[in-house]
Image 1 (cartoon, one colour):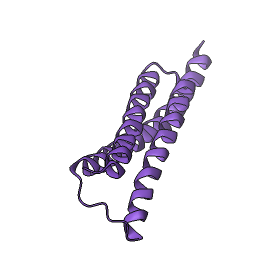
Image 2 (image 1 turned 30 degrees about the vertical axis):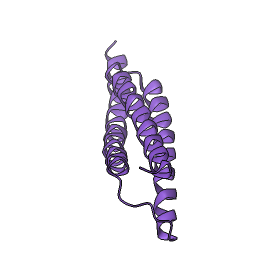
Image 3 (image 1 turned 60 degrees about the vertical axis):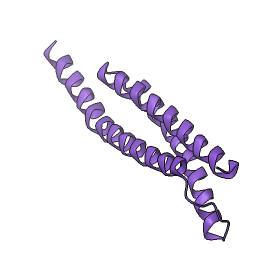
Length: 114
């Protein structure tokens, strides 16, 4: 297998994998009602995903320009990993948008009862 496929594929997998860990940290922080940390971790995960997506886009654009890369199971796996973790990131962001305002609202209501 050609290094021009292996290196970008592994870079995508590594960046996306790092993003998955950050998403897990964000969800853990959300479960602990630490929404500042949640937002921070989601932002870091988005940066990792953007980098992984850029690598994939560069490969696709290269092939569109006529640079033959051939089929690679590893690159296919990298793309699958990227898209799966993008879904996880999108779900985590939605959960944040639901739970963070809800937590603020509950906190305000609890303060009224005191």
